[in-house]
Image (cartoon, rainbow over all chains, first blue to last red; front, side, top):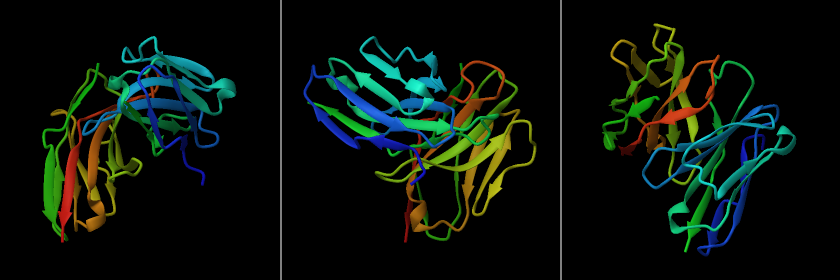
Length: 115
Length: 118
């Protein structure tokens, strides 16, 4: 499968615990994005990497959230001291070099439930 | 900042009929792209169709076509000969063109749930 891969698909955690999600983009895609989607809503942008550089972070990304993309390949999104409001689907997407006209290719997401 | 508005939370259509989903957006950019994405239940989001703002001709992909009205900032999706597999949440999305920061970032509307009935 050469699509965007996210792991795990589902995560249930207790409030206050830390969680980490992984995203493997499509090979040769230099841009990688993280979005958060709550039930019945459109995805909201969290952060974006071009190669290994994190170029933009949304104000939605509080200090408890951190994202990395070492070596410009896979990316991780960590949430520290999870809160019930963090429950959502976390989507990863990647796009190839170029004008962006092709849009972004999405993974299946990681559904986080904080209990 | 860009905003995207989908005013139809839910739509339904009979199989083989035609349905149009509405989308309006607001931006001060002149160079941008518009997209429609489909998100079936519990499945990943996939691109349905895209439109470059500098192109006057409306994009078409098989049964899917758009009506792009740049001056009105309107971008509707028409699905012809609807099929049961078209049942999904549909999102309209905006992306700034190349040359600035945030390039490649998508701004989504709230989505429209489309149900195709047999």
